[in-house]
Image (cartoon, rainbow over all chains, first blue to last red; front, side, top):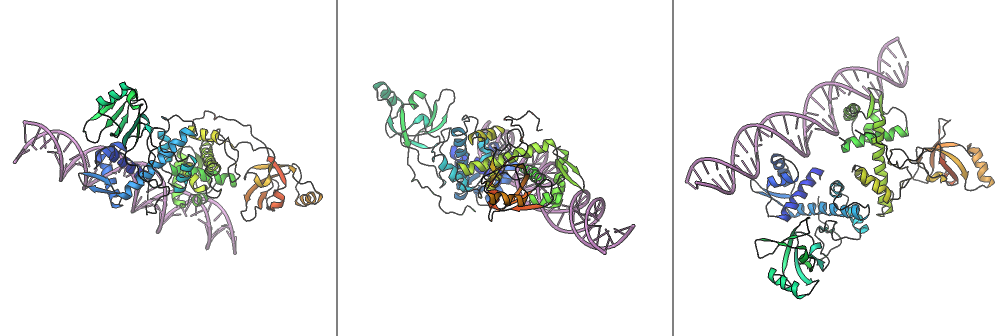
Length: 236
Length: 236
DNA sequence: CTCTTTATTTAGGCATGACTAAATTTTTAT
DNA sequence: ATAAAAATTTAGTCATGCCTAAATAAAGAG
């Protein structure tokens, strides 16, 4: 049975797993769901029994394939509803999170897929985050997005520049960026739109000025094949 | 705090109160919410304490003004979502009840009012039931609805006939129906669209053939003034 | 390598909302 | 008017999901 509470835990774990390490700690999850480590520990045991995650006591937790799929479905619903709220009900992008947090727990697959179609199969939500498709995987992002607009936590490739002027290209050279360079946007700073960017080879995180982000075309690093309808896996 | 469970009880009581008598019995409520009389008894005590209803032990229950308002808000959300599901997501009218049953518990007032506006302030849901407005009262129904299309459980007046032919008017005479006759539709039978109709003077319920219902124009018996925005009452 | 700090789990409770079985009140029928 | 039937409430449990406090395991510092 998928209670609201269970869904929130799975969603939190997915979030932490995407953002950071492989194994997710009990304390980190507790913080995300605004609960205590003790309560979380009990819940993790239960989620483990039900086959949604592997729990290595004292070391952390990792979603199973099944758990990952369930969490992606929740994320999908959340982000689709955010699109609806902004595009059709006229909410601002910063007002929709809480409401979507409630709507995401309405679990009808039929509803989700029809909403998706109604919205025109959007790829990004109003915050610029990728929307999972009905198959539970992220949709490939349209080729040639501006880096500034690109989703976070997804490996991207630089495929072009908006402004081919000498000065800008020289600046890219200084930054070590060229066509084919791979990178992942970790965060978009609300202050001026600067981007925290990570390169696969390097450890350190770089801060990219908005003037650079706005002039770079990027695409998804290794686009997954798009499949429109879910495989028939038993999600129980 | 308005839990899903509490909302379902209030909704059930409103339903039974509108359909039938003044005082609603514990057993009837238990049936509506698919629970036992014992559990229901405990819940009614709680709802009484919180000021949503008056509980006369062993005799039944009646919503207070405050409880009525809360229940009407839930009904409003339910019926608005049903409109959305049918009009914009392409569901059939008989597939939407269960989904709306979940959506109705998302309680943001802002969301409800924006959804209402998006839908064009509909007066009737896909089943032909009246949608409460943001003030928690039923909206006045458009003048001249066909009896077949009219909402249930609302007193109506016959204001005209579609077909003024002799045969039909004679038939109306036999049925005791004329301009100004008041009646309430209790149920629409899915078999052929026949209507269970009650006249204020008489005790018995009459069955009206669809051929009659399709030829009668009706209006709301005593239209309430339309108020678009909610009064500021403290709903707790 | 051991001691201290930190993270995690276990133990024991609590509120909500459900249940069954038993007691009590109301209603109905004779 | 009273006995039988029906409805309602009370008493005693249970599962879920949360909490605090205490015990235990892992990680880090010297």
